[in-house]
Amino acid sequence: MRPEGLRCLRCDLELPAGRTFGGCPRCRNQNHPTNLSVVYDETALARAVNQSRDSSKAPGMWRYRQLLPVDDEDSIVTLGEGDTPLLRVDRIGQKLGIRNLYVKDESRNPTGSFKDRLASAAISVALRLGMKVITGSSSGNAGAATAAFSASAGLPCVMFTTQQFPLAMKTQMAVLGTYLLAAPTIIDRWALVEAGVDQLGWFPVTVFSHPYFGSNCYGIEGYKTIGYEVADILGDDIDHIVVPVGAGDAFTGIWKGFKEYAQGGLLDEVPRMHAAEIYGPLEHALANDLEDCIEMPTEGDPSVAVSVASNLSTYQALNVLRDTGGGARSATNEELLQTQHDLARLEGIYVETSSALSIAAIPRMVEAGLIDPDSTVVAVLTSSGLKHPEITDAYLPPIPSTTNLFEDALTVLEQVYGFDAIGHKTVEMSNGGDS
Image (cartoon, rainbow, N blue to C red):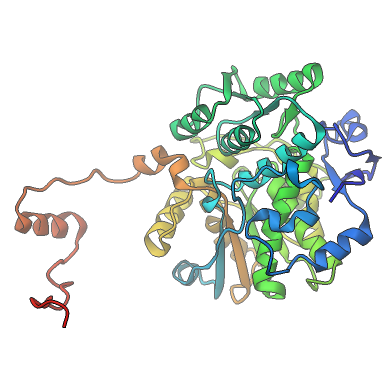
């Protein structure tokens, strides 16, 4: 659907749709950075919402193309992102005391994270606008996704990062043909992206200013489809959504998707949305009735949730909490690693520690009265554990050795793992063939 314009999420300033990437200029000049949101014709949007559940449509995010900011199908850049599984996780739910717990597993996207939805929508718009160079700032999932979709679109991509980032992320970005440049600091890399946008007309996909206002507003439209997909399965049975939140781009996009479904009559109301964070800027802003988040202290050991370990968040993320009656809570490194371990061992799902945050923060939300244990809760798992296996590996014991004798192997199993292989013996296999 062709956008009619862009609207500030704080002051409602309206701007024409086009090459506007720096958030709301009025709010930025007043030191209140805020992102813009894509605006569509309300009648056309309502009609498209009511047609969105047509089961004959192809799977993937672009089944909702009538609700996304591209009206030219030739501009759509897709690698099959979206349509990720919504899984009921009863074992984890039982451990946490949550009766109906689901996870939306975004690690199943093409590059292994939810950022594929952002990149697909953003770079599709870049093609439609005739942009020539894609850029961004990332040391992880956003960079990998931007690199992949830029390659698919046939557009060069310049990605600014730092030297300190996971090997898997670095390799993934590099092999996809991204022009990687390491800046001295995160703020430096944001400034370099902004220079590329302002001086050479590059198209930014990610956050690129400080204090930040959010990622590309067209890309955030891709995150709406997470909300659509969850609502298409659970409908009004959704009580709570928990999302790992840094800048709050996905958080805001999912909320917008639910809002559009509610306005179109496909949901009675938007579920309560909760932010799982590391340093607590949203929790602090709510507790102190602040208009904006402030930077929080980061003492102690570095967070293992590298992808989402921000000590600042955005106005629009705070607005989602207030609009839906949600709350924000954090989790410790120990809780994150234990949750990552539990998801893998109990449910067969290995996610990045940043993704495990949405589950790890739930007990504190229950304790605070934000979530009723008898309600239906959906936790968004944002990315695969294979994106940063070094963190997991550092907390795992070494693999024990054995000889080539099976008896020795059984002894090691019992001594090291406490596994009684004899006691777990199954029935004997038949010596005969098929009858």
